[in-house]
Amino acid sequence: MGTPSPETAGTDSLPAPGPAAGTSTVPAAIAELTDALTATVGAVQTGQLDGRTPCPDFTVGDLLGHLAEFLARSQRAARKLGVLSAEGSGPEAVAAAARALGVAWQPGDALLGTTDMGFGPMPAELAAVITIQELGLHGWDLAVATGSPYRLSEPTGRAVLEAVVSFSPRARASGSYGPALHLSPNAPALQRALAASGRSPSWSR
Image (cartoon, one colour):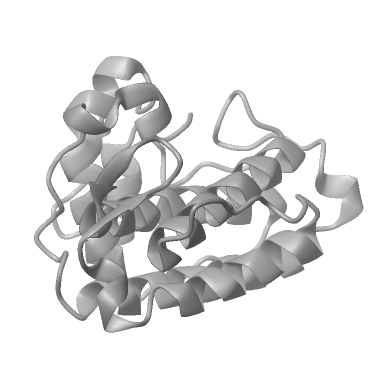
């Protein structure tokens, strides 16, 4: 199960930035998400690369490749660069890219103006919300596929949930999200985000 991207959705059809966009919540959430991804990627073993993930079309190795490309696109957007390519899709390269991305979204001007993730101009705040959604969902995908713990603070979980909910109508129509699963409104925000994207929080290898 993938996540929506401007490449398939078209930037003109993407939603406006979520409620948290434009506040200190966004860089803090991205910093926590990139820290979590760095730890998860660092624990990936070579023998796990062919393993399945919650995304039916991705093995662990495929998911690393997808993340490598996305991390480059998001860093390009944060730094407002013309071109930025992935440096590799191995665990060490992806971990380094995650660390760099966490830094890239911290300056206050990263959220200002218009930027480009390689799909056409979009508000920088929208690029940040896409980043929160992508890292929140696929970070969890990678963690559960490789047997690593994946814990986020409740504020960051809420940021992921808000991002997922904002993309849900288009993502579900395109097949990027599966049917939403019922979960208690009292469940942790990350679990509710997973359920909203069609993922089962109890998925296991």
